[in-house]
Amino acid sequence: MSEGQTNVASETQIAHLTKLTHRTDQMVTAHSILRDRYEARSNLLSGINIFSAAVVTFLSVASLEIKDALLPVTINPDYLLATLAFVSFCGSLAELHFRWREKASVHADAANSYARLKLSLAEGVAEKSTLTHDRYVSLKTAYDSTSDAVARIPDRQFVKLKAAHKRKINLSSYLDDHPSANILLTRIKFWCRDNIGYTAATR
Image (cartoon, rainbow, N blue to C red):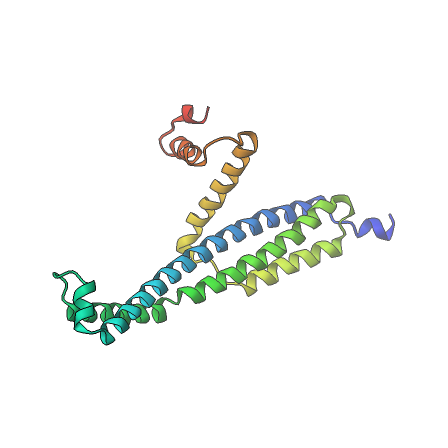
């Protein structure tokens, strides 16, 4: 047996790379969901803080005539000023405590890292019979390094994120054969199938 043949990756190694590719794809989905979730929370909180601070600034410098003209009679400008100042203060504390923007950035980096890794793994799996053992070891090392370097998925969220990924794959596969299907109704069909056993919903 030649040196080139002995350096070819085994079927077990190729199967392992395939498994790592699926696992990496799942991590891309999980980190993307967390990125979008934390970014949405951060944007909402920032919007509330900016609005509150703007109104507080306006009420602080506006004359009594302008306040009376713009605000309903039932709203006391001083009470509104105090309330929005308190909201702005609490919002600022919440930003410091929850660090949603920072978490969004961390998970965005993780999603990007896993996306690049997924591409490399897919290329390795596509090589199949020409994939060398050295190439397999390199890809496996890249997977281990990426997993160690990026943010971890919290244990309490892992199962839900895994389920979200499986639903995405299931929906994508279904739409390949039914491109005109309504996405919302299809999600409802799958939910009925998996939760109340309504098998007729998927026919």
